[in-house]
Structure formats: C-alpha cells, structure tokens
Length: 171
Ligand code: HEM
Image (cartoon, rainbow, N blue to C red):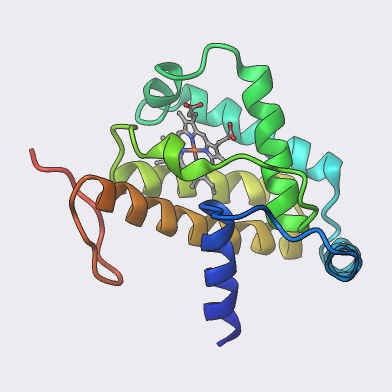
C-alpha cells in the first residue's frame, strides 16, 4: 500500500497536471521529511553533485547511451544542474526541480535495453559514490522512475505494456 501510494505520487510528480502544493502545512511537513531523509541516509547536495557528475561522465562515454545524449545535449552544464535539482527533489523531497521529464523522453529512440543500461550505470555509480543506505534510496527511486518513463515511451508509441512487460521496438 505504501509503495502504491508512493508510486502514484511519483507518477503525478513526473507528469504534473497541477502545480505542486505550496501551503504552509505541506511545506513544513516536507521540510521535516527532508531532514529525516538527510539524517537517515546521509544524502546531501555534495553527494547528489558527485553522483550526477560521475554518472553522466559514464553515460557520455557509453556506446549505447552516449549517442542518444549527444544528439540532444551540446552544453552539458545546464543539464547537469537540472539533474542535481531533479535528484534533490526526488531523493530529498526539496521541491527545487520544476521540469517535466516525460515529454523529454518520449521523442527519444529508446527501449528496454537503454533503460537497463541506464540503471546498470546508475546503480554502479551510486554504490561507488554513496554509502549503502543512500545508494539504496537513490536506486529504489531510479528504478521506479525508469519503469514509469519506459511505460510512457511505450504508450506514446502505441504500445500498452502489461505489468512486468518491457518495451522493444519492432526491428
Ligand atoms: C533510457 C535511458 C535514458 C536516456 C537515453 C535518457 C536521455 C535523456 C536526454 C537525451 C535528455 C535531454 C532531453 C532534452 O533536453 O531534450 C534527458 C532528460 C532528462 N532525463 Fe533522461 N534518459 C534516460 C533515462 C532517465 C531516467 C531513468 C531518469 C530518472 C530516473 C531520467 C531523468 C531525466 C530528467 C529529469 C531529464 C530532464 C531534465 C530537464 O528538466 O531538463 N532519464 N534524458
């Protein structure tokens, strides 16, 4: 149940239909959660920066993923900044990221193999850069978001995946 609610919140977050809540009680509750996650996992902005920078250095050098990014991103500094804000929002619930990832992935020529490789590199990097509780925290969220993006990419291409099914393009 907790996971299902978390997933719904995450999906709403990835494709927001309305602005995030900003009321006083929501903000103070969120601040409490952020403080609790920081205390339990040791995640802070420096760790997020190290994770993002190390991960995207590997992605750029990767034969499968590198060309997909190179076709879209020429100036990496703004992308890395956005990704640090994204991970701050996802991992620490700070609410500092305001983008919409789903529409950015729908036009990309990606399928299951790309998501598998992305997660493989992300998990490897998280274990290199973070203590275990922090790595687990990042990885759990990355897996859920990757699944949600894969479902979105598939459905934008006319394929409705069942639970556990993967998206593979026709040859
Ligand atoms: C199949 C693997 C993936 C590939 C090849 C990929 C590629 C890309 C590319 C090329 C962009 C830039 C798009 C543009 O600016 O037009 C982008 C943006 C983004 N990606 Fe991915 N991505 C992948 C998986 C993921 C996953 C699993 C996550 C999250 C866990 C993620 C999070 C993001 C976010 C948040 C942005 C938008 C940043 C912004 O607001 O500018 N991506 N991705």
